[in-house]
Length: 213
Image (cartoon, rainbow, N blue to C red):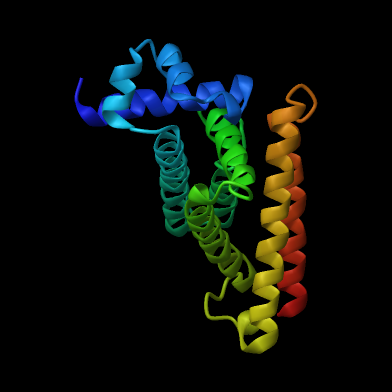
């Protein structure tokens, strides 16, 4: 197995530990056990637990951003209103723990972001992840508020900039809340209910764009 694949195997082991037992248990020894490796094999790639956790956080962020970039391209290429609407829902769903892969990434992402408050070595990655995700949401909000006119005056001037920030933060808060609730109460907050909440939010955005125009 090459180095890149081995690191990915170790990252996946860290994410599984975080999902089942929390970030605090993700030591080099515990990760080695979870991955079925000797501790020395993990130390070959990561000298300390901090190095391992920082790398894992970065890898999780990169995975999430890659999925968002693919979904954003789908929004851009959609031509019909119905097609674009489904593409937007697909993009927003990439934030949510709707399958095992996204659930593991979401759990790890939230754990790392929370830990970054008191673990300085995670702070830079937490800042990068927030800025990158906010940029994607900002592009989406810009497109939705502009409606049929990508250069529409809904976003012109200082008020338009403030509206963009407000709506982006409102959508990010909705996504964060849905992610947390879906992780904590998966039997209640189903895929269908998540979609209903997102549909309601998008309907509100369309009303906002209509009023602004």
